[in-house]
Length: 308
Image (cartoon, rainbow, N blue to C red; front, side, top):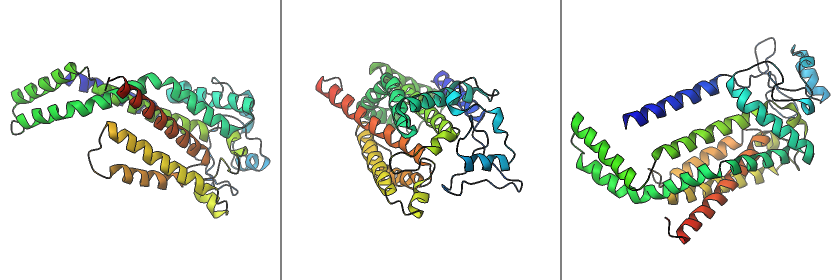
């Protein structure tokens, strides 16, 4: 058990180091204040990976002493373009940005490209997510036995009793072929992918020059509503509903520790979705729809075949 916890801590540490190696930096003026796009309300990113084409946006960068000539045009960007910026950018952000740019060139729209790339990434993760969902369902059957073991050693705090408790729980895991590390790994991967998407989206200026339907991909719903574009309400409601039903379906397989927790988390995510760029919100909605469909298909199939 100690060995597993040690390995888990090492992975967490490596992931944190990976994520801290580089990130998007706000463009600041000579007074040290973030520079905002007056049209979209978007905080400008200093370390973009390719040149913006919009004249007004280019001027904002040039006025704040960013040499755009050092950067490739977005349609000429490659994963190896630019200086080395750390592992996170080199192995995740830049390759992901490259794929988004290339697919956008094929479908002629960055919003549609984000949706397609999100689906492709989630398809690649289907084997791991399938295993995680099966493990979550198994946990429902194991939980009563775990509670019995915990009650058995409830008032025993000596080292020998703690070791026996750990051994009995591990034996229970082996009996049901349950690996708690699977859910942990899946959660870490989901976090890394979310941050990679977020970073890639922020650092591709061409995304913010290309509208998607009636939405400005650079604007947040908050800014869009201030500009009287009430179509953003549909995105917020859609994201809230999909998030709620996705959490509710997951709760059926892996009950949350506190009642009403899914409602609280959904409310928080709705609040956050008012603030993030629409491009990020598109990724969020697409991922949640995919997860909801995947969870429903896997749980229905497994129950039908009597595996759960």
